[in-house]
Image (cartoon, rainbow, N blue to C red):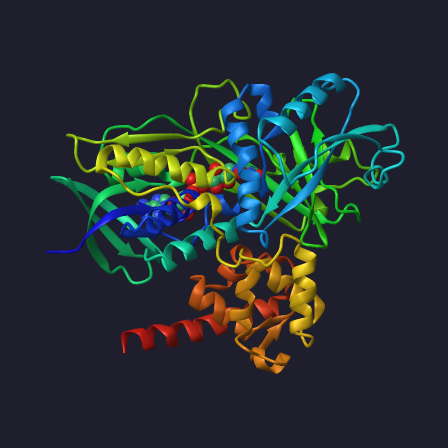
Amino acid sequence: MAEVLDIVVVGGGINGAGIARDAAGRGLSVLLCEKSDLASATSSASTKLIHGGLRYLEYYEFRLVREALIEREVLLRAAPHIIWPLRFVLPHSKGLRPAWMIRLGLFLYDHLGGRKLLPASAGIDLRQHPAGAPLEADLRKAFVYSDCWVQDSRLVVLNAMDAAERGAEVLTRVECLSARRDGDRWRVVLRDCRNGAQREVVARALVNAAGPWTAEFIEQRAGLNKGLPLRLVKGSHIVVPKLFEHAFPYIFQNPDGRIVFAIPYEDDFTLIGTTDVDFTGDPAEVAITAEETRYLCDAVNAYFKRKIAPDDVVWTYSGVRPLYDDAAESAAAATRDYVLQLDQGDGRAPLLSVFGGKITTFRRLAEHALAKLEDALGPLGAPWTAGAALPGGDMPDADFEGCLARFGQAHPWLPARLARRYLRNYGTRAERLLAGATALDGLGEHLGDGLYAAELGYLLRHEWAETADDVLWRRSKLGLHVSDATKQKIAAWLAREGAAAVRQETA
Ligand SMILES: Cc1cc2nc3c(=O)[nH]c(=O)nc-3n(C[C@H](O)[C@H](O)[C@H](O)COP(=O)(O)OP(=O)(O)OC[C@H]3O[C@@H](n4cnc5c(N)ncnc54)[C@H](O)[C@@H]3O)c2cc1C
């Protein structure tokens, strides 16, 4: 008789990884399968903000905003290497939202979530403030407020790592082909996408965190009736060479009532997004249209002195929000809150499906998911993630620059840019990557543009990286910085070392 797992989680985006981590930490036996790379779908295509969502106040989403505001500081403490505070500048534009309305919104934003670490909002004079310099001269007044930045796909990987370190089996490039109830168990068929090999596992509960494929999973893979309505909403971003030198991101109001962010990105760039367009089709094929690119260029051109055109765009990415369909009139108005559906069939073998949710709220969503599963499975252990660091997040103090200075002193041979990148990506786990090296030579082969074999080996062994895209676009955003020659060398290195690791495992 096959081992009976407590929970099989389908989907290695932020919600699946977060639920797997929480469940594994409660001592449950967990298997997570992801058909592609971790965070290969929506969870690497976000605006990368841990935020309350100022604009959701206009839609009276007070529950969501409050939960998300509280989560900002919880997550900042858990992963200060990949999450950091930002001060957003919201220029006041005549004819758009009146200043009193913005002030009221920011007052609520400051107070709804019991803020302790992040500074409060304030009014600024753009003629005096560094954020005013790149803007059109008729913009005089603005507001600044706090939210946080997150390396979204790294947050997913760190949750998966923590889950694995607490005993979960994490399988990437393994698809859940089908699932069927068998009494009070699920029989789940998994297929290795690399070689087609199939395996059946048995579980007490199944979690469907398939993101944009949530409805497909319920109807086609689990063979059940329609789940709750899902609304797929596309959002695209463009990246251009940097439009300003200072560190303040902007949030611009658009005449259509939407907002667009312009955020300092990867040192040399500005990230601009997003759009909100209803989506049909295959979520794996989502891509920006010329119309969306034009929309984003026009949106920021209304504010910056320096104008941009589609030809300035160096990279784009698009994602599909898997939203719970609350029948809102427009895609922008559709609720960003999450809904968890528990299907218990004949009272046994629960299927829990996730609709909606934000990167920001993944941890609370996981707690709610486990509370729902408790209704079906009985007590599952107490919530524990609120005070727990994610891998690498156990930094000795809250001041990242202080930690960086100490890291630099401990490894004086590391070039400053590399030391910063290692600490930002890996936190305290950077020491494992360095593995006692005392000189650059100790990091092994240099594949170009500051990428050494030691880092690739770490990503291969600990972070499920298998291809050059995994490394360049999800474990990092080095894809924006490295040459084609380096990309090819990375691909060749991973193919060689990955195959060697598989040979070793099967020997
Ligand atoms: C443009 C945009 C901007 C956003 N900005 C923000 C932001 O700034 N802040 C914020 O908090 N949130 C933001 N969000 C929302 C956030 O990104 C999503 O809510 C979140 O990433 C959804 O995560 P998920 O795990 O539900 O889905 P996904 O990340 O899509 O993960 C689902 C996974 O399931 C896998 N899968 C599907 N079917 C199977 C199967 N049969 N077998 C195995 N695996 C399967 C898929 O490959 C996929 O990786 C944004 C979203 C978009 C689109």
